Amino acid sequence: MSILEVKNLSVNYAGSNGKNTLALSNVDLIMQPGDFVVALGASGCGKTTLLSCIAGFMQPSEGSISIDGKLVHGPGAERGVVFQKHALMPWLSVVENVEFSLRMRGMGKAERRAIAMDKLKLVELEKYADSPIYQISGGMQQRAGVARALASDPAVMLMDEPLGALDALTRAHIQDLIVDLWWQTQKMFFFITHSVEEALFLATELIVMTPSPGRIAHRFKLDFSKQFVECRDSRAVKSSAAFIEMRETVLSLIHDAPGTHHG
Ligand SMILES: Nc1ncnc2c1ncn2[C@@H]1O[C@H](COP(=O)(O)OP(=O)(O)O)[C@@H](O)[C@H]1O
Ligand SMILES: [Mg+2]
Image 1 (cartoon, rainbow, N blue to C red):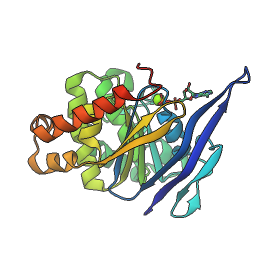
Image 2 (image 1 turned 90 degrees about the vertical axis):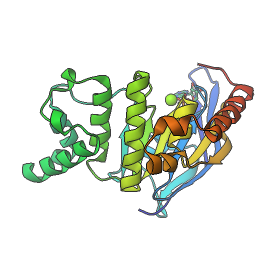
Image 3 (image 1 turned 120 degrees about the horizontal axis):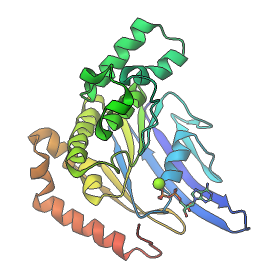
Image 4 (image 1 turned 90 degrees about the horizontal axis):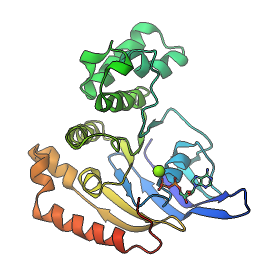
């Protein structure tokens, strides 16, 4: 896959009381290999709705999503999804979860096990391959979710606040890991977060969204992740003058946005 295009996307939710919610209005976005798009914005600005449309979980009211010119009508193996709360199967081990979709597609055990172990290495979880899901920490569960999404070698990774429930140290460690993953694979990432710092650190393109109707209000091209790849010191990157200046710029945009309800 070489290009994902979101064109003029609008989503209107029809409420039971006759009140409609325009969750997204006229959203345009283009992604190519190596692009790491982060969507940032207050609750209710349409981030999850946008991700769900790209994932093919729902159809937009207007506009289109296409991959290499072909319209998206549903989920597909070229798009891997990671949710905030892991959706792993607790009765299966870590590696069995990662290889689950391959098993469903009829791939033989040796082949799918080799692929799953390879993905577990990418998220530094190979030592826990045989552990039951309930025995590993929240951070490890999210990493297992990332490995599972990687199993079918998708061109696009779609991640909806995957680190939102983790403590600060674990979160920072997995951010580093995700940057390495992005750099090594040059996949496209669409990543949602509430955290300005996380957004700035991960994104090659930051989109700041505002609600009612949900739309993209600002876009920034960033290279802090590239700086991390070069210097390997995420704290140095996050405390640099350029990072702090951009953080203040984005924070003021979010706080001054009209119609924003924080939470
Ligand atoms: N299934 C739904 N039915 C009706 N309204 C919805 C539904 N899902 C989301 N919404 C509304 O659409 C808007 C955007 O929601 P969402 O995409 O979840 O935003 P975010 O992920 O940025 O918090 C919100 O006003 C929300 O209440
Ligand atoms: Mg959401």
